[in-house]
Amino acid sequence: MPIEVRAATVFDDVKQVLGPKRADANVCWCLSYRVPSKENRTLLGQDRGKRVQELCGEDPPPGVLAYDGDEVVGWAAVHPRAGTSFARNRKIPHVDDADVWSVWCIRVKPGHRGKGISHHLLAGAVDFARANGAPGIEGYPVDNQGQKVDLTMAYVGTRALFERAGFTKAADTDSILNGFPRVLMRRDLRSIRR
Image 1 (cartoon, rainbow, N blue to C red):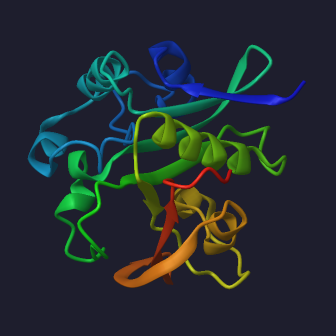
Image 2 (cartoon, rainbow, N blue to C red):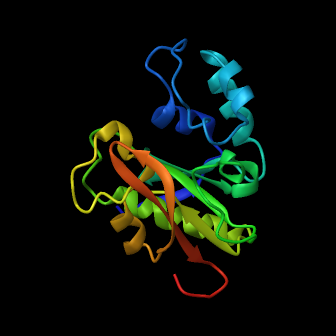
């Protein structure tokens, strides 16, 4: 069955990918770049999940989910850059004033990795941004030059993943993750190409 990517409107499905094993655990829930840092620091335990549940009810929802049949197998956070901390990030430059969207987290559930789902998620994030009127979309992956990236830090993606999805390098950044420099990758969505 082909992988299908849909808007993340079903909180229970988002929870399967991002939620903790223990309800009171302080996991990211992909909020670190999505909500203001002050709010992010005050959200603890179950309040983090409740905030994500609120975001799932907003228009647009906080990202996209990949499904293999009825099973949710992955997540990608995608939102207008203006509504993320990337709008104010000192280490990630703005290459222009376009109202681009950002994709900053790609996560595939254990047991489903190595099957190309991250490619589906990134393509779905692009389609989601385009469908919501974004003139462009950017990501901030590591430029690991083929070297192994620690699994806990792989959520930002790699330059090669973004290049295969039609993104091109728009700028260097001052951000380093897992010892690798991050680059700003951009894809224009005003054209019809997929």
